[in-house]
Amino acid sequence: MTVREPFPTLHTERLTLRPFTLADADDVQRLAGDPAVASTTLNIPHPYEDGLAEQWISTHREKFGMGLGVTLAATLREGGALIGCVGLAMNQPHDRGTLGYWVGKPWWGMGYCTEAARAVLTYGFDVLGLHRIVATHFARNPASGRVMQKIGMTHEGSLRQHVKKGEGFEDLAYYGILKSECQSR
Image 1 (cartoon, rainbow, N blue to C red):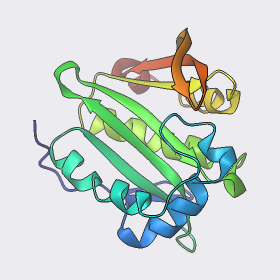
Image 2 (cartoon, one colour; image 1 turned 120 degrees about the vertical axis):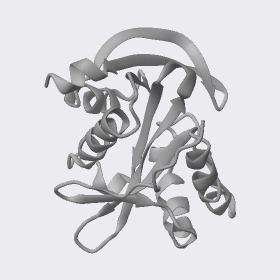
Image 3 (cartoon, one colour; image 1 turned 135 degrees about the vertical axis):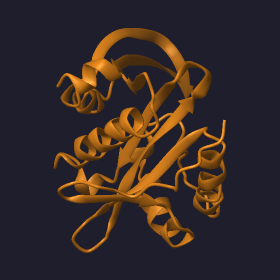
């Protein structure tokens, strides 16, 4: 399936969620490469090598066009500083999306992640027509679970030692929400 609508830019009270550009690469490398951020995510490496951010950013438009996902830069509306990332990986045959996000450490605990995740959840249901959105977090990162709870997701279970991060295995907490549940809130 291909997506015909333009690559989105979403606005919240304090954030603009927009497509990444190659000009964001240095900030991505610095913020995502922080050991505190990288250790809480499955797919962010540490150290974050030169060139990885550019390579990652260059995949976004093609994946969106193919209906595989949407990845957005979370930026402050005032001043435009890049603070993180939010997106959906899409499983079109099942009308399902997987929510993912990270926020740079200087902006932890300020509600930005919840604000960005809520906007992408709404976009996934209202614009992309998804039926269900899921998300996971490392069990040792309960702050990520609080974001999922705040946007209305339900804890559906835990997957013990489900993924490998570095040399160790991580338990995942699994959350989900249906379109009908999101609309009723």
